[in-house]
Length: 394
Image (cartoon, rainbow, N blue to C red):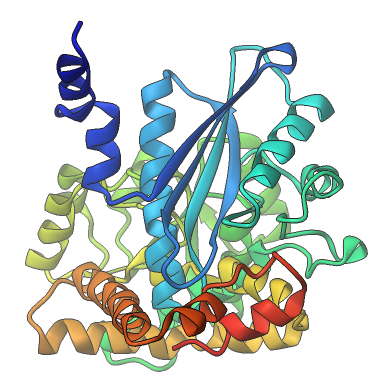
């Protein structure tokens, strides 16, 4: 095959570079170490506002293409999440692909950490599905660019606490916008997902006077939730979409809200912690056509990212919590922007995020070369002074 033919295939629809180009990724790194079974992908979407940050997802995928699609979508979402959240960070993500029956080992995590270290701070990793604070502690012994550590290891602890707080505050903003209510008392909420974020959210909702119905494919998780929160009711996994409730809150894996599900839902607000919960743009349009208000996921589930950003800046948990509380006002602003610009809420949120990135790019064009070097210096290249400089950006 000629070079031209080979390049053409890579750039063709579905080829590697086509997949990178259509989402405007800056870099995608494939990592391998056969001796320890490492197969990993690190995606850096956009580093205009700062180094890319995103968790490390460790799981079995049905194929390598599924893993690549996952890391590309998630890293782009992290760019929007960081920018919309007013953070001086870019979007990144990583996945470690496990073979059937393969367990994560210290050797596997060490090899991955060393690959992250090779990127010299352009990518900062954190926890995600399949990775624990103990995993991050091990990685941090071989790489400085690891956040989301436990409190005893110098971090701010479990990020699901502030993630769920942000989701709750975003949900409150959506209820105010759609139903005109400042008080959630008496509202009914269907919560999909009994993971850490979902259960923290259930607690917030019950304390606010809501009735809650919960569903999760893990029967043991549902049973444990019922013991912890006797006031909730439960239903079958697929029946959660048909509940006659005010709010539907997706807190499981992404892509579950398809066009057909959007057509059958009875809730008038959708607000949850799941990343990329909508399966397609069509699903978003169906929700809008049915007057169901969707709170953009990357706006309201940014609490965990804000928390690890606060960790980088050596802020306290209370300082991080105060920043997460701002998600309420940010969400209201998104809805107002969407209305004034005739956009869907997720379109408005993305435009707000992109506008901030473009504004900074335009600012850097006006700087001389020395100023630009100062502004763009990596937060981990020296000490926390460079992070303080990053924080002075827009």
